[in-house]
Length: 160
Image 1 (cartoon, rainbow, N blue to C red):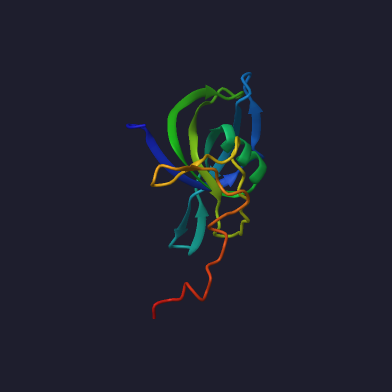
Image 2 (cartoon, rainbow, N blue to C red):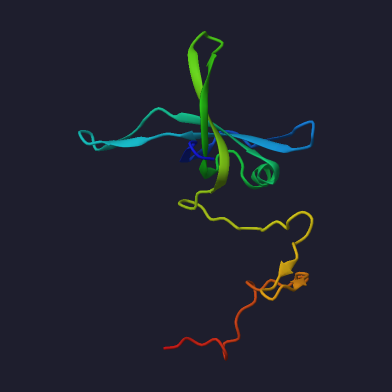
């Protein structure tokens, strides 16, 4: 939507994703992402950790279920989403605090220090029918994935 603040954060999951379902059966997941800035102290030539920023992130529906199945506590993630207004609260010790909240648009593991294996989920309800440029409607080919099939090397040679 227009006017919303979109941000990207990189950090580690503080806990395993918490998957719940609304009374209507809609999945919602909540994760806490912590990001700690590091700066180089030039006088001592050592890295110094700053204060950790914690962001509560939520996702809905199929994305929520995918997140709960894919990432765990400690995973370094890249999260893009819409920043929500901070909510103020008081700790048990009486300290005033505010929490940042982010509604997730995209999330995935950071591949800077790790590898990942992607498993594509089938869409619920099956694949939609495909309409040709001539107005014909065809059912999708069963089990055939045009992107997964390599080209015939005799036909698809490089022009140089």
